[in-house]
Amino acid sequence: MNTIPASASTPIRFRLNGRDVTAPAGPAQTLLDLLRQTFRLFGARESCGQGVCGSCTVFVDGRAVSSCLYWAALADGAEVVTIEGFGSPSHLDPVQAAFIENGAFQCGYCTPGMVVMVHELLRENPSPTEEQIRSYLSGNICRCAAYPQIIDAVLEASAKAAEGGCT
Image (cartoon, rainbow, N blue to C red; front, side, top):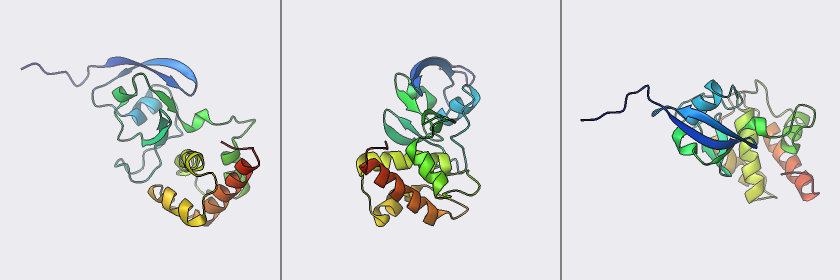
């Protein structure tokens, strides 16, 4: 029987935060591990390793995915956007700015995944209610319990979007 050695890797090509990249992907390597180990992008974080906390959320072809469960090899040919692909240190993305303005974080561990999910929410529903925000972000856990501030940040980002300044 032929088996693939656990150390074998296959080069994959994809678009990462707006630039074309190539990287070796191991047969059991997650996208989260590839992003952190190969590209030194540490915004997406592993907390639960089971896809239930949202800390590792990134976009793959425009959809939010749990990168701790997403095989790196599946990113071949895809467009991947991490939190590092939003805004810049000198010009924050409007959702990032709303999180800061509303103090929507404490330790910050969950914040990158929350920001990615808020982008998806506002793309799908530009004017969500508080109940819709709570429901949409229910897969993102904030262990510091900054939920009221997160809700306020999403409402502010939504209002800015309505004025033409977001997502």
